[in-house]
Length: 200
Length: 200
Image (cartoon, rainbow over all chains, first blue to last red; front, side):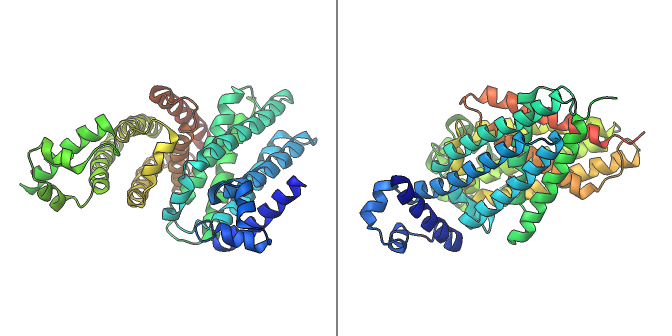
């Protein structure tokens, strides 16, 4: 019962955020959308930022679950890693729409301390997923032996960076930015995988 | 005359920022340090953020000049690229001290829109420098032929990302963070250079 109420709130919030962005959405509007009193909404979420974080967290949890299933399936480690990047780019594209980051100055609000914990959690989870893939690749002799934690951290940090770099694009066009990030993560993936090839 | 006054202000501002950080420094204190009236200081710099940007810009200009000289010297392109990373890490270590970013939440102030233009400028300048190094390497057949603008952009974006990733470290210790960033940029460099090796 609790869970379904929270889900209802999250769905309504997601719709608002996706259509109007974080800054132009109010708690009142979300409450009105689902016929809930403002007091009830505040009972579940103390402020708009925390509600936004909950929406993002749900997406991230789904991402982590999807990647976990991907890892468990029998496939080459390099395939898993490539798939990881595609799924990750899709996730962040969705999150981008959610927060309506249309130019770099608007990312400002996303650096609110409320989001730091979320980013740190995501970083750790992603690192664990990549570690699993690198371990699998080494076990199957598909990758050469490297320090798994160090290279997993490098991989995730680079992913974050290429996304940040995408914000430096001069056009305010979301599609162009998404394409640029996709292209760059693909290039990074290629040099990363080339490096992991076992020496012949 | 103008220039030397500006230099005096920048030096005083640098000392304050380095010792107390951006948020704990006031325009009054900087003016007092050099026996200048507050009105005169504001004549040169309309606010603290712009003064901070000017201090950072000076560092960046020195960096760009130093790398330009490095590029002109006869040496292997891979050496230039490695040296670039060392000099860049030193620069950002100094800038880190300047703004006293001791934990991720304090980076908040650095995402002030005032700094966005600065970051975009720096991104473009770095990209040009890396392009020059990649061209030199290709000319000398030290590197294989790749799309120079695309790989230069990948390189600079990854550098930005590894720095951002450094902020995800759990300890608030500047030295540990600096070491982590140095290690990761070194690892990235190794896989980047390995990829650029001409096919045999």
